[in-house]
Length: 135
Image 1 (cartoon, rainbow, N blue to C red):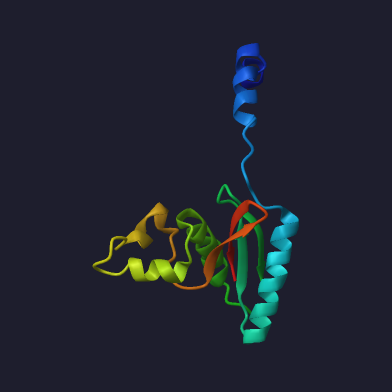
Image 2: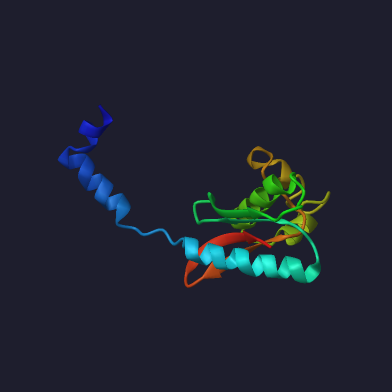
Protein backbone atom coordinates (compact mmCIF):
# COMPACT_ATOMS: atom_id res chain seq x y z
CA UNK A 1 0.00 0.00 0.00
CA UNK A 2 1.43 3.39 -0.96
CA UNK A 3 0.46 5.07 2.31
CA UNK A 4 2.38 2.51 4.34
CA UNK A 5 5.46 2.77 2.13
CA UNK A 6 5.50 6.54 2.41
CA UNK A 7 5.17 6.27 6.16
CA UNK A 8 8.60 4.63 6.49
CA UNK A 9 11.30 6.85 7.98
CA UNK A 10 13.44 6.71 4.82
CA UNK A 11 10.59 7.89 2.61
CA UNK A 12 9.59 10.62 5.04
CA UNK A 13 13.13 12.03 4.98
CA UNK A 14 13.02 12.14 1.19
CA UNK A 15 9.57 13.74 1.28
CA UNK A 16 10.73 16.39 3.76
CA UNK A 17 13.76 17.15 1.55
CA UNK A 18 11.57 17.67 -1.52
CA UNK A 19 9.06 19.76 0.37
CA UNK A 20 11.70 21.98 1.97
CA UNK A 21 12.12 23.94 -1.27
CA UNK A 22 9.20 26.34 -1.71
CA UNK A 23 7.97 26.79 -5.25
CA UNK A 24 7.12 30.41 -6.00
CA UNK A 25 3.55 30.69 -7.12
CA UNK A 26 0.66 33.10 -7.23
CA UNK A 27 -2.13 33.28 -4.69
CA UNK A 28 -5.79 32.98 -5.61
CA UNK A 29 -6.35 36.49 -4.27
CA UNK A 30 -3.69 37.78 -6.70
CA UNK A 31 -5.32 35.87 -9.56
CA UNK A 32 -8.70 37.37 -8.77
CA UNK A 33 -7.24 40.88 -8.84
CA UNK A 34 -5.66 40.08 -12.23
CA UNK A 35 -9.03 38.88 -13.50
CA UNK A 36 -10.75 42.05 -12.29
CA UNK A 37 -8.13 44.29 -13.94
CA UNK A 38 -8.45 42.28 -17.16
CA UNK A 39 -12.24 42.63 -17.12
CA UNK A 40 -11.84 46.40 -16.72
CA UNK A 41 -9.40 46.48 -19.65
CA UNK A 42 -11.80 44.43 -21.81
CA UNK A 43 -14.65 46.82 -20.99
CA UNK A 44 -12.46 49.80 -21.90
CA UNK A 45 -11.76 48.16 -25.27
CA UNK A 46 -15.45 47.21 -25.63
CA UNK A 47 -14.63 43.52 -26.15
CA UNK A 48 -15.89 40.34 -24.56
CA UNK A 49 -13.27 37.76 -23.69
CA UNK A 50 -12.19 34.79 -21.63
CA UNK A 51 -9.49 35.38 -19.05
CA UNK A 52 -7.24 32.71 -17.54
CA UNK A 53 -4.52 32.75 -14.90
CA UNK A 54 -2.17 29.80 -14.44
CA UNK A 55 0.10 29.19 -11.46
CA UNK A 56 3.80 28.39 -11.44
CA UNK A 57 3.08 24.72 -12.13
CA UNK A 58 1.22 25.74 -15.33
CA UNK A 59 -2.14 24.65 -13.91
CA UNK A 60 -5.25 26.79 -14.18
CA UNK A 61 -5.73 28.89 -11.05
CA UNK A 62 -8.56 31.20 -12.08
CA UNK A 63 -10.76 31.61 -15.12
CA UNK A 64 -13.71 33.64 -16.29
CA UNK A 65 -15.60 33.89 -19.58
CA UNK A 66 -17.57 37.09 -19.89
CA UNK A 67 -21.22 36.86 -20.83
CA UNK A 68 -21.38 36.85 -24.61
CA UNK A 69 -17.73 35.88 -25.15
CA UNK A 70 -17.20 33.19 -27.77
CA UNK A 71 -17.32 29.69 -26.34
CA UNK A 72 -14.13 28.78 -28.23
CA UNK A 73 -12.24 31.55 -26.47
CA UNK A 74 -12.27 29.58 -23.20
CA UNK A 75 -9.75 26.92 -24.25
CA UNK A 76 -7.69 29.50 -26.12
CA UNK A 77 -7.43 31.69 -23.02
CA UNK A 78 -6.21 28.80 -20.90
CA UNK A 79 -3.71 27.63 -23.53
CA UNK A 80 -2.45 31.18 -24.14
CA UNK A 81 -1.80 31.61 -20.41
CA UNK A 82 0.00 28.23 -20.43
CA UNK A 83 2.10 29.34 -23.43
CA UNK A 84 3.09 32.69 -21.88
CA UNK A 85 4.17 30.84 -18.76
CA UNK A 86 6.22 28.03 -20.28
CA UNK A 87 8.10 30.38 -22.61
CA UNK A 88 8.14 33.33 -20.17
CA UNK A 89 7.21 35.58 -23.05
CA UNK A 90 4.25 37.40 -24.54
CA UNK A 91 2.36 35.28 -27.06
CA UNK A 92 2.49 38.05 -29.66
CA UNK A 93 6.31 38.05 -29.39
CA UNK A 94 6.33 34.28 -29.87
CA UNK A 95 4.29 34.71 -33.03
CA UNK A 96 7.16 36.43 -34.81
CA UNK A 97 9.52 33.62 -33.79
CA UNK A 98 7.09 30.88 -34.89
CA UNK A 99 7.04 31.99 -38.54
CA UNK A 100 9.03 30.18 -41.26
CA UNK A 101 12.69 31.08 -40.90
CA UNK A 102 13.15 32.12 -37.24
CA UNK A 103 14.42 29.66 -34.66
CA UNK A 104 11.02 28.69 -33.21
CA UNK A 105 9.30 27.87 -36.49
CA UNK A 106 6.54 25.34 -35.80
CA UNK A 107 6.63 25.79 -32.01
CA UNK A 108 2.82 26.04 -31.99
CA UNK A 109 2.72 22.29 -32.68
CA UNK A 110 4.59 21.43 -29.48
CA UNK A 111 3.18 20.49 -26.08
CA UNK A 112 0.33 18.50 -27.54
CA UNK A 113 -0.90 21.47 -29.56
CA UNK A 114 -1.43 23.66 -26.47
CA UNK A 115 1.00 26.37 -27.59
CA UNK A 116 -0.85 29.43 -28.91
CA UNK A 117 1.24 32.08 -30.65
CA UNK A 118 -1.02 35.03 -31.26
CA UNK A 119 -1.37 38.08 -29.05
CA UNK A 120 -3.20 38.36 -25.79
CA UNK A 121 -1.18 36.58 -23.12
CA UNK A 122 1.83 37.67 -21.15
CA UNK A 123 3.92 36.50 -18.20
CA UNK A 124 3.26 38.35 -14.98
CA UNK A 125 5.12 38.54 -11.69
CA UNK A 126 3.78 39.44 -8.28
CA UNK A 127 6.03 39.80 -5.21
CA UNK A 128 8.45 37.14 -6.41
CA UNK A 129 5.67 34.83 -7.48
CA UNK A 130 5.48 33.84 -11.12
CA UNK A 131 2.36 33.23 -13.13
CA UNK A 132 0.90 33.75 -16.53
CA UNK A 133 -2.18 35.77 -17.33
CA UNK A 134 -4.34 36.26 -20.34
CA UNK A 135 -5.68 39.78 -20.65
